[in-house]
Length: 127
Length: 260
Image: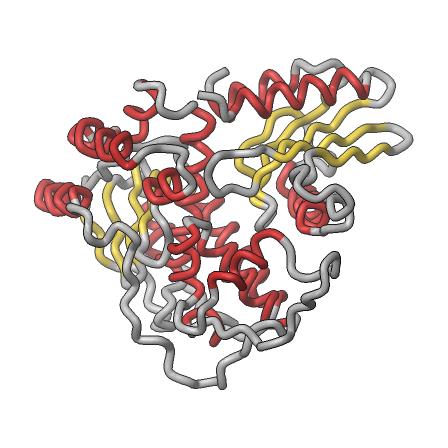
C-alpha cells in the first residue's frame, strides 16, 4: 500500500465496489476518491455522509452502555440496491477521517467487505 | 459573516502555475506549480506538534527529520523512508495541518480581512510536498468551513476570545448526555484564559475543529459568549515548543533569502 491512493485502489478491488472516498468528517472534505460517487461527484455526497458520521461518532448513544470499550468503528447503511460502509480511521494523532465504500448490493458480500475494509484502514496507518 | 478573504492573488498564482510562499497576517501558504503544498499559521499546531503531542513520534525522531530531511526540503518524506511513519499517516497528518493552517491564513483571527499579499517567488518549505492541493479545492473547502462556523453559532467574537465555561451548565450525574469527545476535551482545557487557538495548541488538535466545537458549545449555552465588540485577548500565541531551538525558523530565513 502506498498511502491514500493505494488504499483507495485496494478498496475498489473489494467485490461489488462502485466507489470509495476518504472524507474528513469535521467539514465533509473529500481527501481522495476513486470510482463513482453516489450522486455523480464524490464531493456532493461527502458533506451529507460526513454529517451522519459525525453524529454517530460524537453521540454517546452507541457507546455509553460499554464504557471503556472505545469509540464507534463502522456505520452500515443498507438500501434496496446498495450497501454503504463507513469505516472510521483510527490514528495515533489527532484526525477525523473515515473511508466510505459504496457497494452494489447484488454483487457484494457484506461480511467480506466489512472485513476487508477493516484490514485496509488498519494498514493505511501502520508504519 | 466572519472575516472572509476571497483572494484574487491566489487565483492568479494558480493560473500562473507559480512556485513560492504567499505570506499574510495569519501565516503563509506554499505553492508548487500552482498547487498548495504546505501551509503554516501560528494559530494552529504544526505537523511536528500533532505527531509528538499524542506520542506518535518522539521529539528526537521529529528533530532528526527536521534537521536531516529539512536540509533538502524533504522532512516529511524522510519520516516515511526511515520507517517512522507510514505514507498514509504522513498524508493524513499533513493534509489536516495544511487545511487547518490555510483557514487561518485566509481568515486571520485579528479580523483584519486582509488577504495574504506578499509573495516570495521560488521559496520552498523545508517539510517538502506530500499531496498537493489544487487552489480551487482549497477555496471551496474554506467557504465550506466558514459556513459551518456561521451555521453552528453566528458569533465570530468567540473565535479569538478566552473560552469561559458557564458554571454548572454541564450535567454532572453519571451517564447523563453531556458534551462528547472533542467538545468535552475543549471544555476541560478551557481555563477562562486560553483562546480556542491556545486550546488547540494545548491539545495538539485541529484548530478549526476546536473553533467549531467552541461555537457549538456557545450555542448549547456551555461557554460564555463575549459582548460584541469586546477586545479580543492580547495574550501572545505561543506554540508549545516555543522554547525549543527553532531550526524551522532558520530554514524559513534561508528559504526567504534564496527566494530574493
